[in-house]
Image 1 (cartoon, rainbow, N blue to C red):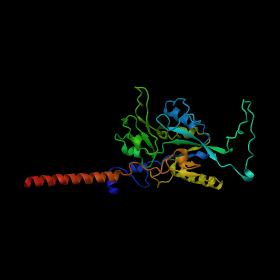
Image 2 (cartoon, one colour):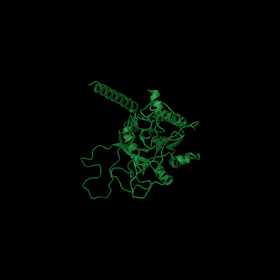
Image 3 (cartoon, helix red, strand yellow):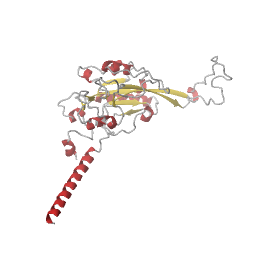
Image 4 (cartoon, rainbow, N blue to C red):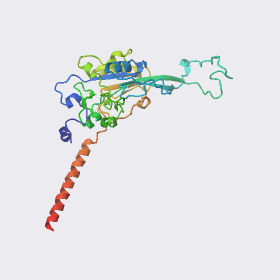
Length: 319
C-alpha cells in the first residue's frame, strides 16, 4: 500500500514533513502559528491586519444579533476570524466568592428593580472566551488532494496556499476541508478573485522575505505567535503546564498532535475549553483518507470487468 501511495506522489498518512513529502529539496524549517487563546482580548487587530496586507474586501457591518462578533466565521473575505463566546461558569463559593451585586436603580419606569423580579433567576458568573481562528495548514491537506488543477499546494514552508491564477473555481476543496475554512468569493463580475477559492496563505509573500505574517505582527498580546513549528510546540507545552498549575481545569492544546486525523496542523491552538465550545471539530480527519482504498477497489473492479469481457468473447467464439 505504501508503495502504491508513493506512486501517487505524496503521503496520505503518518508523521511527515509536508515540504519534503511534496518534493522540496532542503526546505527551511516548517513554519506555523501557535494561538494562545488565554491571552486573546478580542481586539480583532489580526483581522484588520490580514485584510490590509492581503487586500481582502470588507465583510460589511451586519450584526448577527447574538454576539458582539460582526464577522461571524471564516470565509472568502475573512481569512482570520476572532470568535466571541460568552460562557456561563459556576458561581464561586467559599472565601473567594464575590458578594452578589445589589440591584441598581437605573431610573427606568418599572415596578421592580433589575434582578428583583420573580422570574429573574439566580445570578451566575460568566466569562468571555475569544479565539482567533485561521486555516489550519494541515499536514495531510484534503484540499490539496482533491484540487484537479494543482492550484492548492504545500509550499517549502509546509504551509498551504491557493494559486489564484490556476484555480478554476470548481469548489472541490470547499467540501473537502474538514474545518470548513475555504470558500469561493462572491462579488461583482470582472473582479478576478470572484469565484476563486480563498483562504489564509500564512502571508507566503512575507515569509519569502523573512517577515512575520501580518496577523501575528499586529497582535498586541502575542496571542498569535509565529515561528518554527517545533519551537512553537515546545512553547505551547510550557504554557499548557503553567495554566494547569494555575488551576485552569479544561485547558488543552488543539491540532498540535501529529497523530491526529490530519497528521497535525501548522496552525494549532491553546484552548480553555473543549473544541466544540469554540466551534471547532473535536476529531477532524482528512476527508481523502479512503483515497488509497478507493483506487484499489476501482482497479479490482476494472480487472473483473476486463476478465468478464474476455470470458464472454471467448465463449462467443466457441459457439
